[in-house]
Length: 219
Ligand code: AMP
Image (cartoon, rainbow, N blue to C red; front, side, top):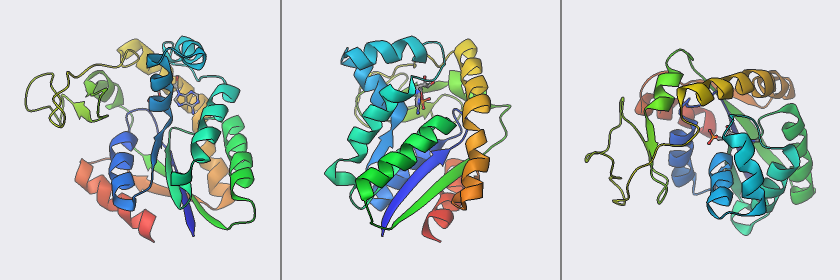
């Protein structure tokens, strides 16, 4: 049965790292909404120019713009057996849009849809954000607090120079948390009521969280 996995949790809760590993493990595409939007910005498309205005402020990009990008991606052949959707939906409006687009794409096919919630203490997350560095070439994510690159500022995997995301500052991080608590956190109740929410304890190191994640994915 097709497996549709979506992920909820505050900024820097570790979703990006874990979903990248999970995509490799399940051989499903890893669809990271933030990265798709940043790719539009790098390519200087009309969508990218518009998205940048919101991303730079820590706000959500308008619902129609993101829905267009996501529907297009979920309709591709490599999503036929399942997908890992990271960073979408982030509001009730987007949750409804996702239900609608899944129905259009799947027709009568029965699917296994799960929303995996990363439950984490939020006090340390701003520190995680300001210490985060990423590789724009291969997508590897580092953190100067607990996963530094071997050579300062250089990606271990591909040798590219590491960068800090423009919205990974203390001030914008705070905005992103506010957006998360107002817009995204209500989805936890929404998916609980639908009976599809699986919660994991996202405190701890990468390996511990990975083991908990595998349990809820394989049960
Ligand atoms: P992320 O890489 O997941 O931290 O997302 C970075 C930024 O991209 C967010 O702060 C938003 O501005 C934008 N973004 C990512 N996902 C969405 C979404 N589902 N809806 C609207 N904006 C989004």
